[in-house]
Length: 633
Ligand SMILES: NC(=O)c1ccc[n+]([C@@H]2O[C@H](COP(=O)([O-])OP(=O)(O)OC[C@H]3O[C@@H](n4cnc5c(N)ncnc54)[C@H](O)[C@@H]3O)[C@@H](O)[C@H]2O)c1
Ligand SMILES: O=C(O)C[C@H](O)C(=O)O
Ligand SMILES: [Mg+2]
Image (cartoon, rainbow, N blue to C red; front, side, top):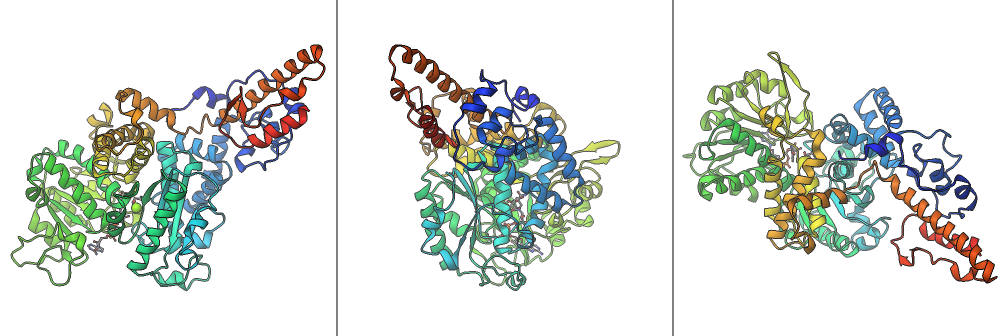
């Protein structure tokens, strides 16, 4: 991540010319209650005095490095992953900038602890482990008809929200309000990967009841105990929610996440609000991004690709649609492109003539060329199709058996094996299994992370095909371009941009995705692609970005990104501005006092102004300005 190493070394920037005595004795009483972050042990003494936390923190001033060492040592002393998750949650809630400094310096190591796979267990046990508020809950039973006023309770301005009803959390089923861990985790990545300011993010969980009977009967469960509302009731509730969110924050970007049936809301809102569905669209984009690179490596032309998908839900269909669009761009007709796919669900291969009603979202890819044959198992389908690609979005851990993997290796020089279900326990196979049973031939990406594998004298690094590579850039692109909607072209552009983000070394090492440690730079590239597509679609309202070069746009994106390593400079600037303002007062007052005994009353400053210009209010500033006036008089 790009951050000021100079600042990080010392823990704070070189100070403005301000004497300790001036700060200590002349700063006014501040009336705000210090926020948890104000107790940061890297805060210089002057900052502590300004924030009124002086004396409430041990006297030594920490460097960022020391803080990081201490946190990592504490983290490593926690035995289980869920204990580590809990420690990191507390850190995020008590010192958000330190949390993000730690995360950005250790993104590869910490992401699995705040996101998949650990977030899966955190959600399963959310009510059992609950300690602190971390988002907004809207309840069907208690709040319907009143969402507008509940939303007013959120204390900050919001640029982006991730909303779930908890009904399909990863591959773990309906977890009701326990699903809140997912918006919390996704938004942490928005901040870490795309630099959305943590205070501008809103984790949102709607309580529409749950089909999870075990939870409904669990005394510790913190959601309503009603069964899931009907689709019609859900629609009315979401209509009200979308209107209320947008009324309070007109430019809010809304990401739908982990809904059991997300198709109706995407269709209903995508042309009306700035929203997208991460499981359908984000997943489609991230897999397309890796797939573009896999096609280059496999050497198999799009017209010869044969893709078998285990899982025909929101993610399966989302990915298949995105790949279809790619095949069309590569010269196939739509009919030819969609014929490259064979989807398999819990009842077997998806065909038009199989018994029972086919869910609407499966009809597009349903096969009509099966001659009345129905293929029940994945093994049968693989034998029938002879695929080049095997995708797993089924929630069935281990479904890619050694036999199936071995067969893929017999059929192909470089089979594409993407077990994408989350968390790790639901992955259709592990990296080790994929390598072992294809004899090291496969092009691999999984939804959850797997460790590097030592194989025949080489270190093999698995790709991670997780939507975390694109949703941060999609969201940031929509925010910065002030896009009216999130269009299909913007989603597609995120995939193309991702596919170009690999370094030459990563390409020559046959990686499909860039190193996760470069995620912030990758997000800049994805964001740029999304903004350019928004402009082409005339969705953008930030027109000034249209006429700048890509280089300038990248710089603009970087400067708009929250940087936890420089955040403290804001408050230090506030202090030094105040000090120079105060010193100017003194010299002004004393020189005028010499000539005119009583000019003092005319030099009192208006609260919230600097150099006579209005200034955006920042934390404590009004109280500060008022008090300064009072003290000077
Ligand atoms: N890697 C990523 O970025 C990413 C993104 C989104 C979703 N996912 C994962 O993909 C999985 C599916 O998500 P979804 O939103 O599509 O869920 P979903 O509930 O909409 O779909 C699940 C699909 O799997 C099928 N299925 C269930 N049991 C099966 C079986 N025994 N054999 C064959 N098919 C079976 C279902 O019929 C359904 O078609 C989840 O584990 C989720 O975590 C991963
Ligand atoms: O949450 C993730 O890790 C990816 C994806 O959105 C999922 O639902 O599995
Ligand atoms: Mg999801």
